[in-house]
Amino acid sequence: MAPIRIIIDTDPGQDDAVALLLALASPDELTVEAVTTVGGNTGIENTTRNAAAILELAGRSDIPLYRGCDIPLVRPPLRAEHVHGESGLDGAALPPPSKQAEATHAVDFLTDYLRAQPQGAITLVTLAPMTNIALALRKAPDIAPRIARIVSMIGACFEGGNITPNAEFNAFVDPEAAKIVFGAGIPMVVLPLDVTHQMAATAARLAAIRAVDNAAARCVAGMLGFSERFDLKKFESDGAPLHDPCTIGWLLRPDLFQGREVNICVETQGEFCAGTTIVDYWRVTGRAPNALYLRDGNADGFYALLTERLARLG
Image 1 (cartoon, rainbow, N blue to C red):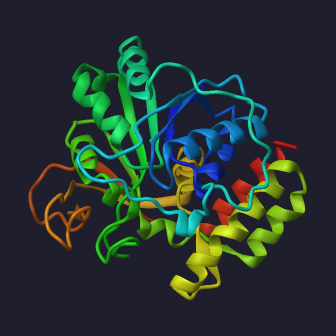
Image 2: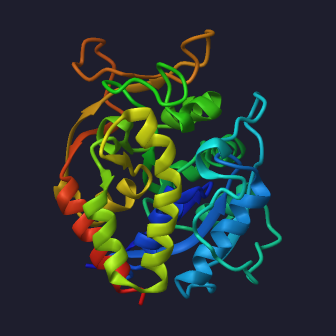
């Protein structure tokens, strides 16, 4: 079967970087056609530089990189340097990349590139606030049929939120953008906190990654060792959640995840509710499903996959 053609929209961030490496290590299943960046975990200068550094680390400087929006559609920016460090990739110890972003803005690239594709040709993977995707859809609604699906790390239901009591970070940073994307009629696959919180980077799992002992694995172990200090204290668990790589994990091994088709809408109003993903998990509203919502995952299988693929980058 031909590889799935994907574009990754991202704001690296350590877990974004791991997701990129997992995708880049899997060329038999995935063709990464481009990477687009957005402000989120840190500002756009950092996220773009970090994406370039990860592409170079994986030996894939040939993949085009496009710099996108730095701020949400209508809200002031919210960053997460308290989790990811000032660079967004603290713990990685990567040299400054020589790779540069293309001159074209990410939103213009998405609209022009998708318009040139046949129906259902491209899968979008979103690991960040959905600003770029929303603006592309608002600028060119005709691109929607060209998108086979959008696979996103976003939202939560049973786990509550990780930036407010109700909201997950990517949804909270730009809820207006998320509302546009969920309402665009494009098939969605959602990897929420409900499943990513099950993917704990325990000491044993990090040790297995460290034992691979190539540049990519050492980078991942260093990054996760840095970023987990925040979540270990927050969740009082034996390992921090690993969020964004679950999107790539699902594309590679959907059998590792379980969920159901539901309707999801995004709340944009209220002091305490903005950014909440309203998940009709029990189908009580009668609204038509618009997303496959994944609630459970096989953590051992996921980490075995991640470790095996990182070894391919040696």
